[in-house]
Each structure stands twice: as structure tokens, then as C-alpha cells.
Length: 136
Length: 136
Length: 136
Length: 136
Image (cartoon, rainbow over all chains, first blue to last red; front, top):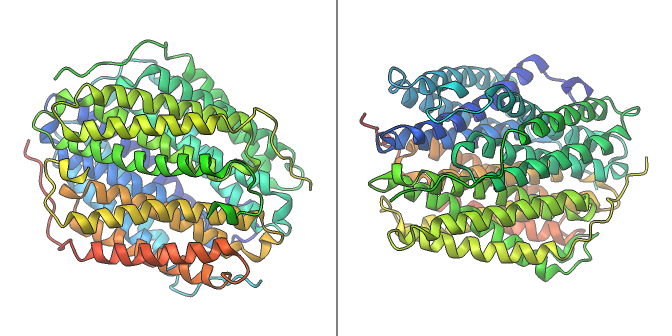
């Protein structure tokens, strides 16, 4: 799909893997948040639920920027990918602490860790050069 | 991942396939919208771009409801899945009309059609019964 | 802002009021979900939290469709507004049941009720006619 | 609404103003993107449309994190607010260049600039301290 874009030129494997990881991470985080809420004592999982929801929201925004990368300001995309790497890392850390009690947290931690790596790789693709200007 | 949820009980294959199709459809629609915009004459693709963006927004919302289905009001989930089926169908129709000129529209049409089918199958899983009430 | 759109022609007061109500309802629902989670016994508020999150997701999608209404398929916009009316009504009902215990649920119920009314009014603006076709 | 949250304690005026600015900026950016697409020569507005859509996506994610700030990792919230400030600044710059031709770009530039300021103010509220840990 990405190759059919008229302006695409970067390392599409890296972009494609990051997009796939972001979509998966968003859904897994939403699922983990809802599963945490369904556990017997959700009051012990507040931070986990919030990090899950935060990470899902950030993954969604980051993916949409990555799709529109051809004339995005590299500075904005850089900053968003950086926020996403932090969100995935934080969510993975928080979920890891519950991984032995809850299988959904174990899966979520692994998924976040993988997404963090793919977003880090994508970060390497974008130099902080300026954005394409419209000519009207 | 879905099996680790404490309240999950439905046909998880149908749910899982719908969730996967929704995540893919959202990203493909966003990509098609951006690729249409990058074409030489985007003014001939306005409806296609808008349907792509609409379909992406609806797929995102529908997936998040499907994740939280265990105590969602069945009526709301039904209505949202119905809107999603219509959005996928409409977007597939609009993209099909450009499929011979633009490969991204051809891919998007196929992806929307598949998502439409998976959401239709998910619709069959939810009876319009009432929602689980909180007891405080 | 809406009047500066080259293709705008409908009753912009109705559209504008619905867009404002949707933005407010999304944030209030997200806030109510997080406040419910912060209460002493969040396990008694599971359905409320889920309805809040569902309603927020649906409001976000509905607003974005309403912005792009000029060539949206009327059938899709109709179906999405209908899902949104149901989501607001359901969330208002669920929050109302907790309104005496939690001020955030009382505010959320009123906000959802208002959004439901504005979306119902917007529904009346769109006849189920066909969508604008691209000519390529 | 914010005062009804059991864990709220920060400068709620700053938070509330940022949340309001983010909701407005998201809708104005989506509207500007669609209005640009409706102009006679959308191929001259590609970067503007993409920045609008990027800024809208980032505003949405940032608002949802700001709502859940009580146990969010301050580092993630910081990074997301920073990305949002950059996105608003970039979108304001891009829209300013079209402000004399298109009223929607003029409104969007002002709205983004205001959102940038409110998010900058919110940034000042959060020290980069650690996040609240769950105790299970």
C-alpha cells in the first residue's frame, strides 16, 4: 500500500513496520485497560489503566502523522515519535510490574516494548530538515 | 490477548478478525487519503479523500467500542457497527471508481470491503439486549 | 470559522452547536471516566467508565464527519449521528444513576443529554440523498 | 467539571484553558483541512492540509493525556505537550502564509497560536517527577 503513494521515497520497510506496530499497540493497550478494569480490584491498577489509555492515544496520533510524513515538518514528527517511544516504554514498565498476575499485562508489556523499538527505528529515518512548503 | 480478559466470552475469532480488519482499514484509508492528496489533480479526488478520512475515523471509534464490548450497551455497539459497515461500503464504492487510475484506491477498496464483511459478522454476535448495570 | 468554507451552505448554527457540544461531551466523558477510576471503589463503576470512553470515542468520530459533511455520504453521516445520539443517551442514563454520589457523573449526564439534543437537531439537517461524486 | 475529580490538585485554570484550547484547535484544524481541500487549487495547499490533520491528531491525543494527568508519567505528558506546542507552531506558520487568500487559514493560524500558548503554560505545571505506582 505504501509503495502506491506518489511521494513515498524513504525506507518503507521501517515505516511499514512502525505503522503495523503502532496499530497493534493501540488495540492491545485499549484491551489491557479494559481487562484491568474488569479485574477484581481495579483500584490497584489505576496507573496501569491510565498508561494504557495514554499509550493508545499517542500510538493513534503517531501513526496518522507517520502516514502523512511526506510533507510533515520533520521537527513535529520527531517530537511525536519521541513522545511515543516514551509512552511505550512507560506503559511497558508499568505493565511489566503486573505481568505475573495478569496475562493481559504481560502481552501488553511485550507489545509496547516492540512498538518502542519500531518507533525508535523510524526516528532514525527522519532528519530534522524543514518541511515542504506550499506554493500558492 | 483477547482471551486474557476476565469477562470475555463471545466468539473471539469473529471479534478478533473484526478488530484486525478495523485497524488495517483505518491505516489504509489514512494512507489512501494522503496519497490522493499527493496526486496531480487532488481536486478530482475530494470525495474520495473525505470518505477515506471519515472511514478511518469511524473504524477507530468502532474498534475501541468493540474492545470494551463486555458491558457496552448492545444498542450503541450495534449502531456503531452499522455506521461502520456503511462507511466501509461507501468508501469502497468511491475508491473502486478510481481503482484503475490509482493503485492506492484499488488496495483501499479491497481493504474496506473486507472490513465491511468482518464488521457485518461481528454485528451478528451481539443481541440487542440491555447493558450490564453497575451496582453501587 | 465554518462560514469560511468554500462549500458550506447548510444551517450553520445547527452544525456549529452540534460541533461545540461534541467537543465538550468528548472531554467531559474522558474526565468522568478518569474521575470514576479515581473513586474509592472503581469496580462499582465499570459500566460507567466504559460508557464514558465509548461516548468520547463516538463523539470524536462524529465531529470529524460533521466537519467534512459537504461531500460525505448522507447515509454514513446519518448512521454516525444516530449512533452518537444513542451513545449520549446511554451514557447520560448510566451517569444519572451515579449523579447523587459523584458530581462528575451529574455534570457528565447533563453534558451528554445536551449533546444528544444537538446531534438530534443536526440529524434533521441531512436528507438521506446521495453523495457528491468525484469526476476524474 | 475538573474540580469534581477525586485526585485533582494542580492549577486547574491552566489545565482547563489548555483543554479548551485543544478541543477548539482540533476542530478548527479539521475544518481548515476540509476547507483547503474545497478550494479551487488544493494541490497548492498540500502541506497546509497535512499540517492541519497532524495538528488535529496531536491535539486530540494531548487533551486525552491532560485529562488523565493525575498518575500519568510526567515525562510522557511533557513530551506530548512539547510535540503539541511544535505542531501548533508549525501549523500556525503554514496557515499564516495562506491567511491573506483564505479566511479559514487566518482563523486557523490564530487558533493554533493560542493553543500553543495554553499548552506552553500547561507544560509549566508538570515537573518531570516520576509517576504514581500501582500497589497490587
